[in-house]
Image 1 (cartoon, one colour):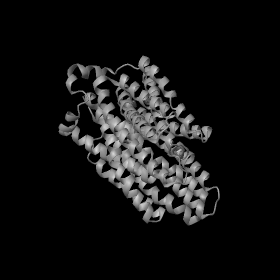
Image 2 (cartoon, one colour):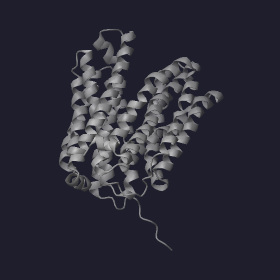
Image 3 (cartoon, one colour):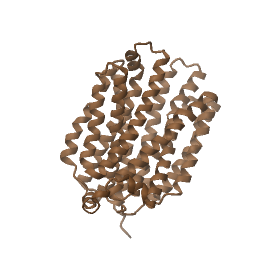
Image 4 (cartoon, one colour):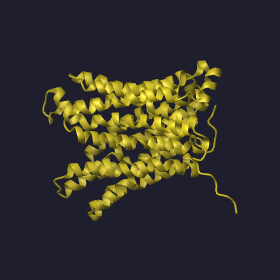
Length: 424
């Protein structure tokens, strides 16, 4: 009788767990910093604009700040991912955490609207940069048989950041400046990063032989092999990020629409709970599941499964609860929808670093994720807004769910990485 195969974590060392913990904490606070604005904007913007909460200027500036954050995240993601290949994972991870924590804290003292805009751009730079550095570091430190699972765990911890932001928002109430002061806390993580994280051996070797090519965008986009992976990786990320903003976060809108139709006076708070806690719990489970599934099937097959399931679940959550007139059914379906539609995102941390060589790993991963973010902007700003303003909400979301099909086309142009050594 043959002995059972060893557990995936049996060869993982204490130091490798430490790397995963530190990188994940950076990503937790990364998600926190991105979400805290959404929870404080209703109180912050009227105060700084010196207008009532219902003034049209509040919505105008709210959308402007979302655009500023998008641009800052893209710029910072591309800059810091390249620097992580040039300077090393340790110093750049520490720098990105300092960026988003210190400038978040300074936001608490902002007295003018333009100051908040500038500070949100700087916070976004750190937020955009940390993910690529952390994903590359985890991929390089963990053995290949544990790489997909570790990457999935790393990305899944973002849910803790969202919950932390929600809890902070409830605690501070209308005192928005206090929420930004809480954002300084991650700066303490920098000391831990600097003194506990070593540069991966693969990066040290690459620096010896390819010093001038480290973090080179010209090589990334000038070499056909890496260029193809970068472009289709960015398009794959675009699908996930466009559907996140256009479809996934609409879970709250679907719940609110259902409750309004039912005449529930408490529709606002109930819909926030439905999305912020119930659907997000399913999303966290989906991201944690991506690693084990990809270890069994490979990243590409897992992506295909998740995309198809998300495509199927989109019309189901839009129409089935309304057909049966059951809000309880919607609450059951939302975490299932989140499991697939948001679980996709964990695959980026497991998949993108394995597509590129060490001297371009953070650069390539950052290019995929952040260019995907930029490409998703037109879907969020124009197409999604237009469809939701001219169609019934459920019809618009169902149509936007068709974007999940595009992911299958882009996946066909990317290689499978299961069981493969990282390219050099």
